[in-house]
Length: 490
Image 1: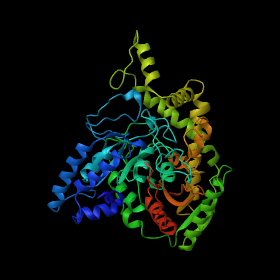
Image 2: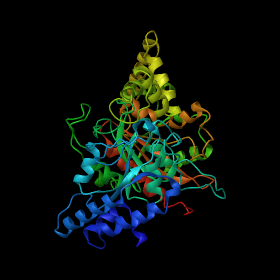
Image 3: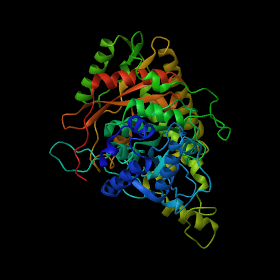
Image 4: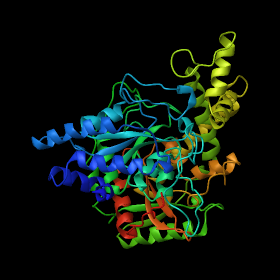
């Protein structure tokens, strides 16, 4: 019954509840699919025995008429989330075979709701990357290919394993995380839906930290409705995370079908940049037309400090990373390379444990925090961040949500941009602003490029207004009618 793997999360939950099939059956199908798709390198840890045990427990609860919101649903977990008894490395060599003795709050929420864990998903090392080329375990391959071309493409990053596994039907949906676009950009590259909620909606407890003031958990799923179902469970107030918000979770699933009639949609003029491909620009215009036809009012807005967002992000994020990653010294956990003395052990461990991109960002971060440069770089970047937030606050006085492209172009081949860090960082040009301002953003697949690759549109909402993201995202999904799937070659 391999057709079960093609179901959406909503369809699978309905089927499980109706006892059309069991959790064990759909879980076994996913395990087989994962075994047959190892060439994609989406999973770095497979947990088939654990998955089947969890599925049997779910089936027993369903038989009694019990069960949570995700009872029996097989999911993939990004290797950034600590999972009790299952190796968690953030896809870095420096964590070695680290196996947590505790569970992250987000994954605990999933298990409490009855979800089943298929395994841990590949990602850029410590979530630092836009192409999944920095993982200690090798590249994740995008299941999509250009028309008439067999070249391997990136699924985006850092949540490349999450996006690839959802697009290739290797799980019903997956957890991901977003520091500067790491949910939305991979979703756009793989024809899936990804949402980053408002900063503080989901707990960061048990997530391996990259940049603490920017990191946020969220899902990658097959549909807007699926993303709403999963986000609802992932989000909760958590006393263990001091930035966690004590706010109620609305009925996001119900919001998806509400439409956009009467809403005002802002179009930022600063996002019409030189690097934006013609077909992406055309799709953006098409998205505007769809929303107008559905009853929304389109208003032009200005976000004047947008051009400073990337430079500010690439100061703030590495600075926080250099502080967060100082704990990886080979002393308490993870890999250790012994030296003749303590300093040599530290140096050898960090030199061999961290990959080149992580080392690059740690050096940048340490530099901008160093004496004499702190005011010139880090402090100034934080001031720019405040200006960017104020831009959004002013813009939202005249609109309810903002429509932009998710990325300047479709997925690219491995090596095409990794040689030029600046060109690679430009992949995040439309997504980092939402992180700097702590706002929710969703990417929805809306069309195909001339080479047959998915293209996504992004919706940014006000703080704590994921409802607007789901309403506009749902409307775009209906208007676009995006049903394309990658042709199976793996």
